[in-house]
Length: 232
Image (cartoon, rainbow, N blue to C red; front, side, top):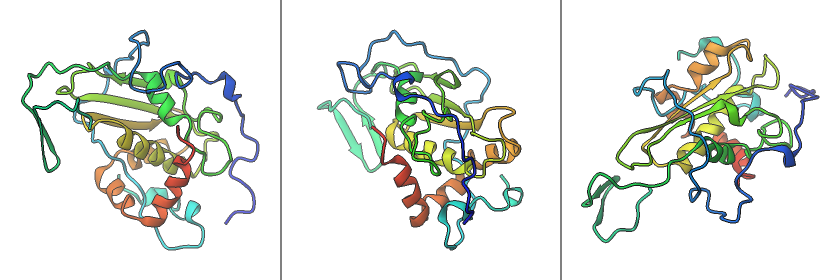
């Protein structure tokens, strides 16, 4: 394990300065007014996969650093408790019409979900380190439960050679996939020009098979669980 942190002196934002809706009178994250702006995700295809790529974990002493080695080798329910709702296995079928409507999810709600994730290196959150930022979150959601929705998050590593960028991205993906309805498709990328291995990291974060394999690794999930322990 390296004796020095990857970034020993990151810029830290004051928690009081971070945008949030969590302190509103209504503490239910998904019960909100419709005043927030929903940023359109016009430049990405509906075919984007809902899972990400993760390097295969190798049994080594240092869990955090072991799965960041050799990036170049990697290739790439919500219901209304309606009496008419029937659940068959994993499929949700409703006898109501297709106009079932809820308040659309917006960028602020996504930010509140992920900004409180712990950084894997520092005792700070991703919001405090400006790894996630409200203007870099884009949501397309009609609020109709039969319509597919999309969330696009751009992350900003604290340094351009950060070897934990893929771990951070995976933590964000796990958080969103656990919190959001399955109709949401999730895309996570590093912001252009913020990482020297931008293309490789983006591939790692958006490949179905590798993230599925990663989520079967108990030690890796333990690291992610620690990252998510601070989430509200």
